[in-house]
Image (cartoon, rainbow, N blue to C red):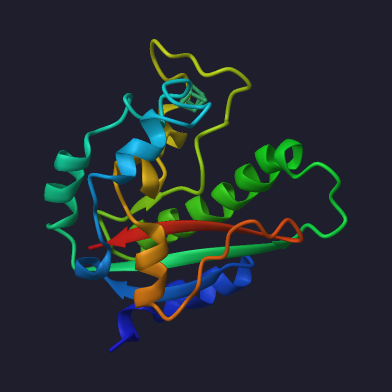
Length: 179
Ligand code: SF4
């Protein structure tokens, strides 16, 4: 069943990512996720990859309905020796994003024309986001949570547990939509 995805699993492993197959139907989209962005996140509205600067939960719900398959991409980082995890988070997620983007490009080359990555965390390709117009549009991607994905539940569907408040292990998670 995973035949046509085999090369992508191999590539993921080569760049240091774990990949898990999920049906696109098993990625829950919930309106309540938007609350966490709009009320409580310091980054709300500060990046073009974050709400309200991305497509709405409702629009994304329609879009994901046009996909059948996806890979959950997991990048585990040992941060046991990191003293300030919030400071380190910028570099960690940027590094993970670039590995995952490589996989999106590979998927496109392999014929998944609509391959699209939902990246780990907000875009930080520029120190300060140009909120008027993205200056690196080829790199602009949004996170699953930004469009209402309940990542915790999506991971449970793949038999994984997303743990919070574990400073010794930072886990970056992305979703590669495939069609
Ligand atoms: S690439 Fe730069 S301008 Fe574009 S969304 Fe990311 S941080 Fe903002």
